[in-house]
Length: 501
Image (cartoon, rainbow, N blue to C red):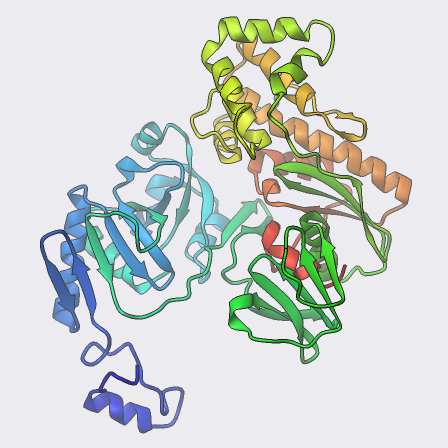
C-alpha cells in the first residue's frame, strides 16, 4: 500500500491514536484500491459510492440474465450463477434472510447457525419444491453471505426478486462471463461446514474459525500434517498454516504419512487416523485414560489408546477395485450367479464396474454409488440419496469383517442382491449407513469390553452424515462418544493430534 497516496481524511486517521495509527487503510473509496468489473467487451472501475452501486447493479442483472460471474472475494474466488444450473459441487447462498424458511426446512439451531457470525455451510432439507425437482434431491449445502462483496451482490439481487443464488469455489483461471477483481493479495481459508443433529453440533470439515488457534497442553514437538503445523508457543500449542512461518526450534518433529521432506534428525511418521483420534483425546484432556474409537474417512478404522500410545487394532483396508468383480464371484457358493444376473439385468451398472476396475485410486463409495445407479459417484451422492428416505428403518447390509478387516466384496455383494431384488435406491442408501452404524457399535462395544476402556471416540468426516450419526447416537446412548469440539472431525485435526503421538 506504500505506493498509494492517501487522501486528506486518511492522512488524518493515520496520525490519530488507535488501530489505524501509522497504517494506511485500504477500505477508503476515495484513495483505496479500485475494484474492476470486466467482461468480453468492456471494463469498468469502482472507487466511490455511486460507481460501486452501479457495478453491483450490473453484476446482479447479468446473473439474473443467466450469466456467470467470477468474484474475487476476501474468502477466495467464487463463481456465481443461477440455482437452475446447480451441480454436485454447488452451494446455495441464501441472500434474503426473511425468506430463508420459505425455501428451507430448518430447525431453530440450523437457522441460528446459518446466520451466526461464523457463517458456516450446512447440509439441510429443502422446502422449495421447484428446487427439489431441478436438483433431483431434497437436500442442499447452503450458507448465508459472509463477505462484503457477497452482501452487496445479494442486496442488488433482492431488488430483482431473487432470494438465493448458487456458487462454487473457484480460482482466477475459472471461465466466466464477467469478472470482479482488484489488485490486492488475499489469504482465503477453506470454508467451515457444520453438522447439527438435535443437541449435537460439531465442525465436519474446513479450516475457518479453527485455524489459527492457541490452546491445549504444551509439548516441545513440531507436528506437520499437509499444509498445517503445530508447535509450542509460550505455555500452549499454536496451530496454523505452515506458509506463515519461517524456522522453529523443537526437540522432535512428527509428520503425517506421505511426507517426503526431512525436517529434523528426530522425525517420526504418524497415520492420519491415529492423529485425528489423538486430537479428540487432547481436546477433552483424557490423557492417561483408556479409550477406544473409530475413524471413518472412506475406510473404517478402529483404534485403542492405552493411556500412553495409540494402536490401530483394526487398521483400514484400502479398497482395491482392480479385481472387484472376480472377488464378488469367488466370495461364496452361488456368488458367480449373482454377478451373471447383474450383467444380464443391469448391463449399464455392470459396464461401469468393468470400467472401474481400470481406474486408479478408486474409493469404496464410488463403487457403492455405481451399484446404486447414482450420478454423483461419491460418498456425497450416496448421502444425498439416503436423505430421501423418510421411513423408520431399513434393511440389513453385510458389514462383517474377514481376517480382522472390513470385507469389501461381501459388502458390495449384499448391495447387488438388494438391487436385483428391486429394493428402492433411497431405502438401500439409508440402510447402508444404518448397517454401518450397527457395525461400528458392535466392534466398539466389543473393544471397550475387552480393554476396559473408559471412553469411546468418533472421528473422521464420514460421521458428519445424518443417517449414520443418528444410528450411532441411538446405539451409543448409554456411553455418548467423545468428538472434536474446536477442530474439524476430519483430516484437518491430524495436525493437532500429531503433537501428542
